[in-house]
Amino acid sequence: MMEIPKSHPRYESLMRREKLVAGIEAGITSMQGLIAHGRGEAFDYLIGERTMDSALQATEVAAAILCDANKPVLSVNGNVAALASPEMVALSRLIDAPLEVNIFYRTEARVKRIKELLMRSGAKRVFGDMPDARLEGIDHARGLVSHDGIYTADVVLAPLEDGDRCEALIAMGKKVITIDLNPLSRTSRYATVSIVDDVQRALRNIIKIIEDNNLSRNADLDSILANYDNRKILKAAINEIAERLVNLEP
Amino acid sequence: MMEIPKSHPRYESLMRREKLVAGIEAGITSMQGLIAHGRGEAFDYLIGERTMDSALQATEVAAAILCDANKPVLSVNGNVAALASPEMVALSRLIDAPLEVNIFYRTEARVKRIKELLMRSGAKRVFGDMPDARLEGIDHARGLVSHDGIYTADVVLAPLEDGDRCEALIAMGKKVITIDLNPLSRTSRYATVSIVDDVQRALRNIIKIIEDNNLSRNADLDSILANYDNRKILKAAINEIAERLVNLEP
Image (cartoon, rainbow over all chains, first blue to last red; front, side, top):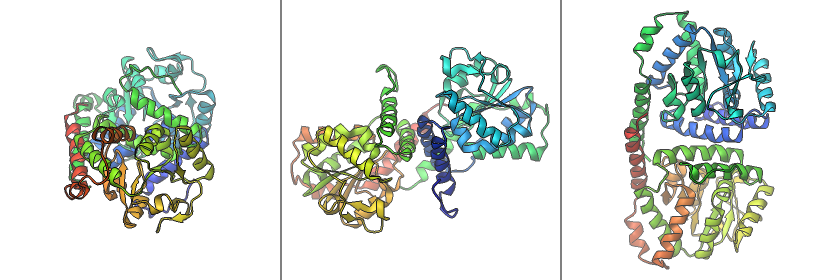
């Protein structure tokens, strides 16, 4: 990785970029993943590289859903692995939920390397390398999942997820939590809860909320969900971005 | 390249992505170039993947400057080569201006491959593989240019340029025209004329304007430039993006 001084004003952003390029070199990130990351970077820049109030609200609801789940599963693709393996593993251990490697440009070698990375990072259970079920309506390689993992989960945390797959999971009756910097992406629009934030920032927030509040099964999740409107949260994110934009001087 | 049906609603955007991945495989595009492209994609999405009125105004001024130049040079980096070699070469022939390969993550092999691609696309003169001058204030590899090319040009068309280099060219008294989908980038802010548009769309527009209007040296460039305010054009682009955003429904 390139050396970047911590004092650099855009240190975090540049480090993320270097992590992804290292992810390509390690064979865990795809080239399309780099382009997708660039899109996220643009939105993060417009957001101001911080957690918006609307995103924090979504994050709190996501934490409550995860703690209340019967069978939560945390989905990991190539970009998530490169950017936030330690955080995904920490959350997995904190709520005792398995991870599942679930990549868009699937190759068995890449799945295996991501699983190895997660295991080295301290993961206890990682599905994905022996898929034995399929998401309906998704073409073969992209629909492969594990029966004991995502297929039978009631809650799936799927950061940086593809729109079609997010839609398929919702159609199966699951609650889907996503983390996506683009409030207009199809994934953001389909998910039960969309956190418009950087994946590492969002995961750290989820972990902190769970630890601080000692969240446990069934707070009053029904009333939390009844009061939550994901479209309203997305609209607030869009408005925050637009407001920031018009106040920026070229 | 992946096959994408022409009927796909996002055909142009997906083709650009495939061209860049092919550019990586051919050794002409850098991995950081893919991330940069993703940032551009996000802005193009917000812009609506079309040429904004403000961008067309900037394009018209850019065409007039190029036609009036004593010594225009067209700068080509890895992304420009992958996305718009035919257009850069066509413009180069139309206004009889040389091209110069000028890449940020410089390797001699990459410079050579980009030059070969341009020559195969019909270029007559391509500088960049034998740099013999330097831009002041830019670290070594990134400051290398050709004396008979960019170094002594009066007008440089530098699409997708780096902010530091754009600033160095301006400091040398040159007119710099850039094409950059991010109206807030340092390059957009430093350039003499910033076209906030996709590189291929913008180049095709420049070519069409020159061909249609039979532009020739010295129209009344002084009065054109006196009436042109690049910051105002950028502000208009930002406002158009923000306006579109608040009207989009998540």
